[in-house]
Each structure stands twice: as structure tokens, then as C-alpha cells.
Image (cartoon, rainbow, N blue to C red):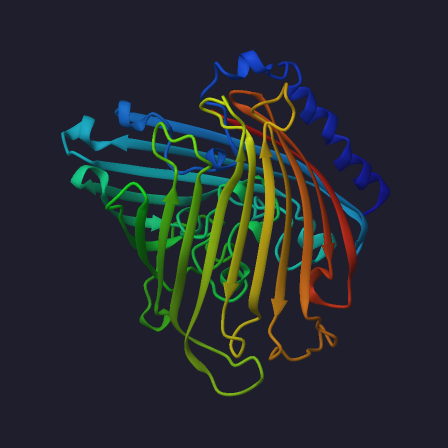
Length: 422
């Protein structure tokens, strides 16, 4: 990037700040009056809040960020990225008297340059809003709940990364390594941001502590560039099917329980397509992987009310066979502290580490004659609640061996994200 373009992208930063700093940051006494304060997970949640109490509810989200790598990567530069989402839900119980039924649809508009593609060339993608620039119909599904909500059936155009793999503790981080597991995102073409696919999802929650969910998707998700507006649906026999299953166990999350809560998930997937052997052998019918996610609050401050202050830890491990995959092992871990500053009870401070291991069966190529064994990163983030509809998030990432290759230097990434949720 030339110097003038670099300055232009960073000069957008004060413009973004001006949009939000006219509203003072919430004091402790004000924060207690705003139960709708958006968290990192809520900002990207599916259905609009309040749908159970209204016939129609909508949600508008806009995220803007400036990112730059003053050190390392393929070359240095800075970018502006944006992400707009509009979702609308219809409560069919109120509209038609169909108890437990609802409709939901949303559209996305990711836009701007990509720091990963243009400068750093890392494997996991620096920003979780990085996507092909286009207005796209992302989701369109029908859901029916049974047995008081303990069983749920959903069918339509969906994405797997909204209900599987997720971690509330890791939701603060921008790097996509903390979103969809690399053993999934780097190995198969599944329905994860920014593409979705037709499918069916079942969820069973027999008790408040245990739940089981499973989904079957079309194996043909296409690509963001080939299906720019996500309006073309294809179901080809040769594309097979993708199956995901996940069990979750929760502790200390019932009303009135003040003990530190925890969530533990064990999941796996199977893709029935054919896959090439990484060492040049015969093709393999099907690909699969497994993952484990643990979220646990280890310290909870006393008398912290509905917004518990304290320290939480996070771990996730992913595994996949090395003979047909780029990534065969990964690990992410991290901590965050809600309300670290006494005057800022709604803010979250986070520190995370991610390690992505490359299969030993991956062979050198003309593009990468010296493939490495891993890509690793450290990320530090601070999520500040400006008011009940806006968050401000400075972020620092240090990416070691970008792209898991010796071709690029370790990169330092600096960023600032502003999220507006209505």
C-alpha cells in the first residue's frame, strides 16, 4: 500500500470515534440500569430480542473497524472493513396462532479491504467480519418448538457456526481462529460465514443442564464469489451431505445460583464428499473431525448482580485426520475478565492464544516450497460498553508464522472496532 493510502485508512479512525464519543461512557450507576447492554456474543446473535413478546421484531447491526500491520506479514498496510446485518423475525404464534413457530431471515453486507488477503497472508483470518463484498441473503429458516421449548426443529437456509463450535468467553476476540475451528474452516467447504446452505437442525434440551443438537446440510455450499447474493440453491448428489452433532453440559446457570457457571461441549462432523490425499495417494471417501470446548468462570465477585463480574477461562481442541486435511490439530485458550475496572462493570478484557498445526502429509508446492508446521497467535482485546447500543473495541494481535510458511514474517496487527446494534 502506498503512503497516501495508508494515511487515508488510518484517518478514518477519528471519524469513527466521532460517531460514538458524543455519548459519554456509562458510569457504574448507569450501567446497572441498562440490562440490554450488548456483549460480544449478543452483537452477532441470530434472532432479535423481544420476538417472544411481539409479532414482528427486527435487528440492525453495523460493525466498522480499522486494522493495520506496521510490522511483518507479506507487506505492511492498513485497511477499513465494515459489516452490516439486518434481520427480521416473525412470531407465528402471535400472527397465526401457531404455537412455538417462528420465521427468521437476514441479509448481510460485508465490505472493505482484507488485511489478511492483501497484507499479512495469515491462515485463520485476522477479522471475523472479513468477507467477500456483496449484499447476500444469509439466512431464511422456519422453526417450530415442541414440549415447552425442550425440542426444536429448524429448516431452511442456515449457517453452522451460529449454533456449533461457539464459546461465550472467546466471543470477545476478532481473529477467526477463535470462531470456527480451523479443523473445520480450513479442511472442508462448510456453511460458515459468509456462506450458508440449506439444511435441517434438531435441538433437544431435556434438562436445563444438558442439550443435544444435530444438523444435516447440503454438501454444496458454493463460494462467496460464485454465489454472490446467496440466492442460488443447488442440491447435487455428488456434493454429498455434511452432518454435525454437538452435546453441551452447563453448570450453575439456573436462576438464583451464584456459583461460577461453566459450559462444556463435545462435537464432531462428517462430510460425505471425496477428498484428495495430502501426500499424493488415493482419494478418500468422506472427511471428519471432532472438537471439545470448555468455558468456565473461575472467579465471581460478590454482589455483582445480573452482570456478574469475574474471571473466565476458555479452551478448545480440534482434531482431524492428517492424510486428507491441511490442519490436523488445533488449540485455542484464553481468559477474560468482566468488569476489571471498578468504574466499568460492563467492560470485558481478554487475552487469547491460538495454535494451528499443519499436517505432516502436506507436500511442498511451487507457491510454497517451504511449508511450515504451524501458525500461532496472541490476541489482546478490550470491549468497552459506550451505551446500550454501542461498543468500542481496541485490539492487538501478534501472528507467528503467518500462513504456516517461512515466506512471511511474524506480524503485529493493531485495530479498533466499533459495533452499533439496534
